[in-house]
Length: 527
Image (cartoon, rainbow, N blue to C red; front, side):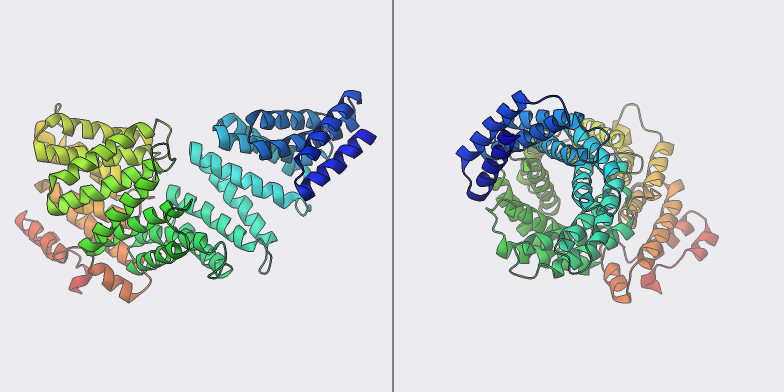
């Protein structure tokens, strides 16, 4: 074993002093030792040491053939240790290599392989083992990455479970507690986005707040902690409508931008997130200054996300959405035309399995419908409906966005039924609206928006029912609010018309439903 020992000493010299020649010599000595070794337990040690050196070589050069060789060496080394606890170290190294290659090349087989290795590792490292936490952390990261690629809810469930296991091992005072809190919160946020359980979102916000206390101003992670907290506050605002959450999110983003300049690696994301929050506040309060600032911020971010940038798709769709809203407010056709061009550039960037495809198709459909209303080309309307139908097929049955999709499809069918062939059945329109407002994973705020659109287009036979369901949702929405001041603020929101109850009663009277008019629940502004 002298050659192997000498190689180990040379690698140590590389680690301490960054001596590349020492690393190259270590690789040569390991190869010489490997050529002299027999296929035994000791051969696995040489293979492992050589693989580690070659992995170091990859980190220095970035050349993929070094990474491929390291993975091959780790795999061969692990084959000699089946049934031995020492195999866990090799499986961990192989998982790291496979995950690294996945991030470079996007091959799902590599990510699946990394997860397989880490699952095998945990079988060899029972709870309480000193090395278990590293493997648990790596497995949680891999599972979360696969969830974002494939959307399997079980992956995010398992990632959440593993990150909570790590959090228990990192009590207050532990150096890794802030990272564990943030990882748990990230998984909970992903699970909320998929299942719509607000308790997950509340817990995520608590975790982010706790992590932020461990990253005070001046800490290298302070800006990142602020932005993560702001994202979750934004999500809770979207679910519950508490303007205080939105105001706090905007404050967090503005504070983060003081530290993280737009031209930095993650600065464009802070610009985009702040812009989206301002857009939400515009939707809530109608202040055009918020919309104008949002458009400027999105434009700045898009300039930083040149063609080929992985987040360019997000900026194209966000800026297009804001321009579309400004067109709706001011009626300038240039805004609509520019929004349509942005949507059309975004469309080829989201192929069939892309996680943002449903979002892009939906906003493209809204743009086409607006183009139809401006220019009267029925083909634009038909194309919009085709895109909405595709969105409905893409979304899983429990996806919160499905309610909005059904609602939009019902609205288009109801509004333009006289132009479509074949003519949509009125019963289909009613069923789509009912599915939208009763969809359990959609937020109550989203369902209430759906119910209001139903009122706008409902025919006489359905109108009373649409009003009843809307008022029921208003009551449910207000009940989940935490304070009287929040409820009052929501009643000032454009989401709930002040005349809702009186309009419902008038509709019932006009339809000869005197009993229903007398029993129409009063909305809170009447109480």
